Image (cartoon, rainbow, N blue to C red):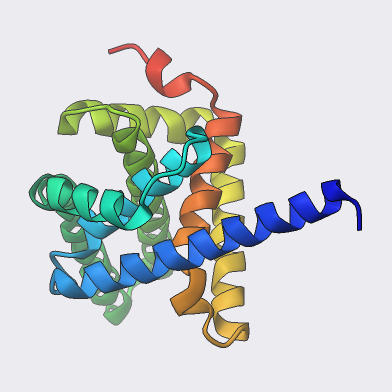
Length: 206
């Protein structure tokens, strides 16, 4: 093998091992945070680390940076993103309630609520990306996330495809959940949004 091929193999193995390591850290710190309080800071920390790996060429300690981000974002991330969980819970309860009713347009109403669930998930994902790009304040984060959702329909399709593909991989490949369930999708989310909405986050009118 020539040096070019060996270099590419080494680069891929390093990239893959980093994703696995980040995913293990993500799952570990979700558990350390008691799951409910650990999910958002661990997810934000994971996104920060993956973004840093994508942007910076210098080596850094993934573990130290992850722990630092987790501690820094523990309170703020829970305050910012738990309202999404509350809204999702309310919508799901509405779907269950309406599904139990027997009236002419119940199925149509339920479909509308499922659309709301999809929109809520997309706004949440965009909000994560907006947040790690330095936008502060709930109102600004939500405004920019909705802007991205409305103005980039192809990204929505890409992200939905990524979710379905990841679900397929996790189901079909033993151990996939522990290896890259969060980190692989986070990388896919960041690279998809950054390539198709170049500079759009900073250019949205305040």
